[in-house]
Image: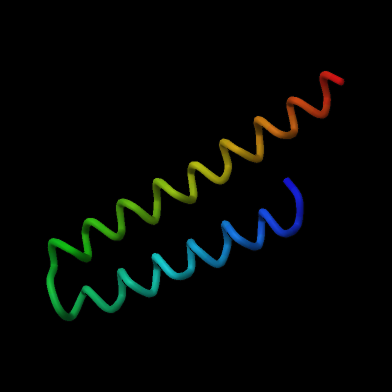
Length: 59
């Protein structure tokens, strides 16, 4: 994964974590939603990284 792409994934993940923290005090259901979205987005980042790594190895 390129450095700009990794930085984008990292910044967006941190933004989702911050939103999760904010919504903990406002609404528990929205906090749970953002928590799940955060985990899903981080997992998606690992999936994209693995696919890119596999593509580079097969060339």
